[in-house]
Length: 273
Length: 175
Image (cartoon, rainbow over all chains, first blue to last red; front, side):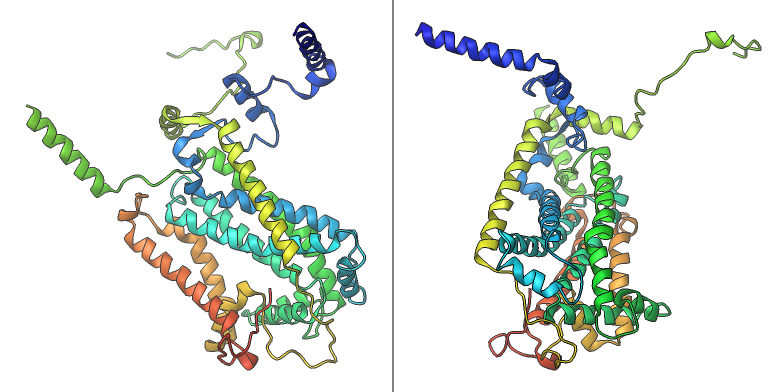
């Protein structure tokens, strides 16, 4: 019994000496967030957490209110970034190499197949979750003041999600991907006035079907340009949520329902007299 | 009170901005304080669990379903029976079947996006209650249903030459 106590004392002493060391205190500037003060300090002092408010309304916290759709979309973006970097180590964006490189993901590269699968399915899922998030926000009327402009940023992020997925579709350089991009790029050529220029810019030349030039353009858009723009827009999107007082919360009762309630209260008051 | 004497520079007070509080935000914060909880741990634990759940779903999907990789593209080979865009653009491709390309391929999607972005500025109804927003909800629901239907038609009911093809007759859908 006393031995156990002594042992625990030694562990406590050890952990205390670590936590009071200069190294520990230089990394963690406050204690474990189990007190209101530390729960506030961690949200304000941590760069990753500070996009969240310190406190939020209980109603907006319900999973059945947001269905976590925005958060899941962001999480999928992170998964896509990590798996995408992995794929970049092995993939060369040249029309002569791209197809065999993607093929070798499932044959010679360790974990290549599952990482490519995760990248593919996360991309499709993200298009779905972003769309559902937008639909959810509309039905809750959460785009109303003061959140109007954040809705606009959301629409831009929706478009960026589609473009990210679309530019990635070409990269395996298989028949389905190239044909899909040919069909999609052809649509751009029908834009009034700028159509021909847009098509030339996308395809990277005067050809009708994608070439090696198209591949390097779509690759650069896919791995660098669009993710960077999306990351900046996401930062603004999240920051504005916090500045507008967090998630809007479930819609209040309607004007008519409120009026009925007031009537009832009045009646009760009259009766109680 | 008007003073003509200017204080010496050392006597001038220096101000630091600690916070800018707008009238509107004060009321919002007051309302929140009544029934608010700390984000750590209440929200973060939910976000963490959602991320874990998503990781499990994604891992299982990726273990059991392989990402498609079709034959290598060769410009000298004849194109496949049906030329389809990625699934989220198949609604637009379906519209392309009915309207001229400038309208279906560029103007309509452009208007849809601009229309979506303009919703908060068109919808001046201040109420967020469902019962007060019947028109907005009806119109938006119609918009969503329309898009879902044309995407499903484009995905599963169109075959070679964009001819109507029942899904049990031939499947022309790629992910």
